[in-house]
Image (cartoon, rainbow, N blue to C red; front, top):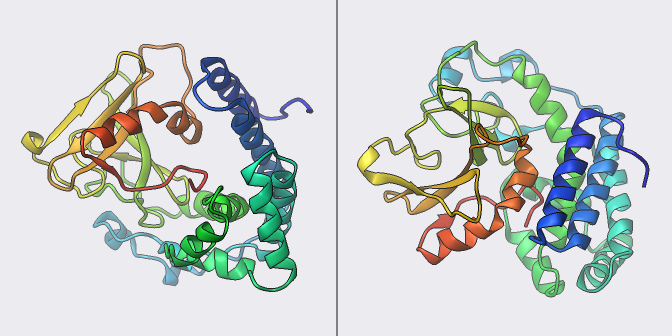
Length: 296
């Protein structure tokens, strides 16, 4: 495997190696995700998306009041780029052992025979419509999230390219947003983190990966701000993480706090690294509102 070329790739490799060292997740899974991340990085070099004119975006006033700049179902994407990446990752899955390879064979056959269309999968993801993925989950029962993983991974370069460009058009706002949803696409956050001496809280969007400042004491999923309805817990085996729970909506959000630790933040992998906290939260009756960054 060639050496990582940029800062993000180096950090990804370091994080993946750290997780492997913990025996927290199967090493084969981390190897796969690292290879997918490399393919995505290559795809980002050629991705091209046509963004809408400013008059199609929310006004600065609307955006500050909580309206997303551009709804997720209106996000443009580079279909050619995504299709090529989809096929590359599908080929990679075919080299894996066990259920994932079997699922890849089923999906590849369906693509070749026209039974499955990538455009339909992309639109389902953008519309947050799980019906298609549920259908194929039944047909690849041993690896039920295979299609979701492929679709999410293939669209990632387009989505992040759009997000990074649209971030430049956000209304100037130095304080925390009152709403926990993403100011760019309106999606729910994947995970949050604390930064600085003041403990400012930032969220990472589950859809476009934009990072934005949010209220420290608030449910990022239903915007509950009553501190009596909000609490959190930690687990000593998972230092640097906490789980914020909301009694109003019954959901939880993991929060990264590495301020006193010599560890760097990479939300899409920190979410996996703290997987044991998801089990604890669910055992206590709380629900997670989003999938992982990888579609599972």
